[in-house]
Image (tube, rainbow, N blue to C red; front, top):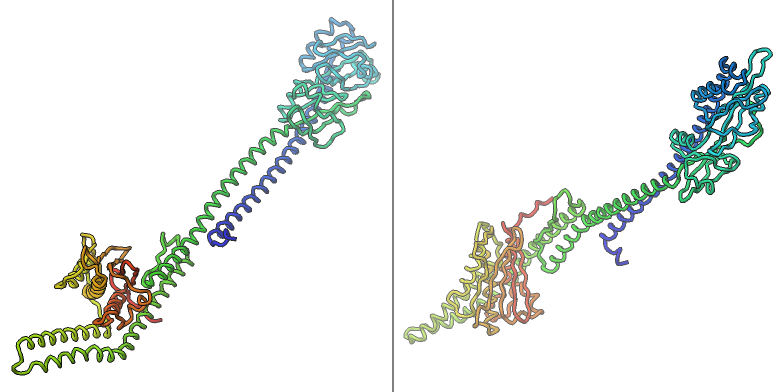
Length: 588
């Protein structure tokens, strides 16, 4: 796939997928664990609340039973009941009801006649606990009431120990109503509903729960029920009576303890949304980090690849790969690869210089042929000119002979100079110089005393300060500019503006470029590949050593030279480092 063909894409996609899977799995596990823990915590809290409701109801029942026994044994109360006079009993009964906090106080005589009944709760007719208490035994029971469930306990009022005499009964009761349910809710942090005979008698929830709530009295496990639009978990708690009391036969009521599952789920949804938002932000940050990591790995590779392609295009082995950014953030493998490649190009450049030196030495074998060919003709002309210098020769012939001898001697001197420059090793003297001045001097040397196409100079006004061998570089530029001027004149562009333009500029840190452009007819492709070969020339009077000498000088200075040519002209590009050639690494 094209998407996975790039190393950067593979690293990015793999890192992003790993982050997504890892964070997604963690969020899923955490969310599921939180949901389970919340459900378990809600059920544990419900069970604890149900146990607390049962304990409070049992404690309240025992408390009222003990208080009823205590009041029934008071001599003052017994004396009032023995009179059987309701006006006599009323003040005491009212006082004890207020002290007990009871919802119901019922006093009967020996025959069961009601002597006092409180006004807060309607005393049920035929209350079975009264009949049991008239038989001499305490009794307790639950009884339906319009306001809830009435829990009553009846105790006999008697005097004597061995053969007690029954004086009447005392019945004390309290309501399990909305007020009592609200007390239980505050104590347990749970809603409470009291159910008797399959009906909800009182509850802390809305009055409409009777139609929707689950009233199963046999449910001893946590169940789920709906109340209106909310969902609740509930647990049934059987209500108890004091032990060892005769209980009339009747179905015992239950207390339903409920907790809202909807509000808990709402809190869980908030937690889940927070987790999802955190996961999204984490995945986004992980994706950005993956992209940065991928770029940090592949960007140096892109820099190295671009440098390789440029070297492939220009053939400049002196260019060094420099990774951008702080060294602490650079990839160690990429830095090692760049250093290895730089060492490799240094070695290749050194091998090329050595090969070039060997080539020059091998070319000396052909030098004799060139010298024999180039020197023979001038010598023959000089010899012929000398023969014409006989005593009595005309003055015109003497002047012509002298001119021929002078031209041929100049030609021989140029041949010897070029051969020596090419054959002997070059020694450089590196010093601070102005590259713009070197270019101007080279153009002036080519055009001095020669009419023809002008040489234009395009350099900045400020000095181009560079450390190099100015004289050697000037000699190389003279050869290049002379060739360009001759090509322009041969193409017929000698007039109408400069046919040759020399430009100089910086191209980077510690590196300058000099370009020589002409408007000649260009170099055919089949000849372009041979222009730097010694003794290759297309001019009848040329030696074929000008460009090879220029290349030796430029490469000796640590630079590179290349030629670009088409039908509109030729451009020679010379790149020179500031500071001269780098020292060769010591052999290992």
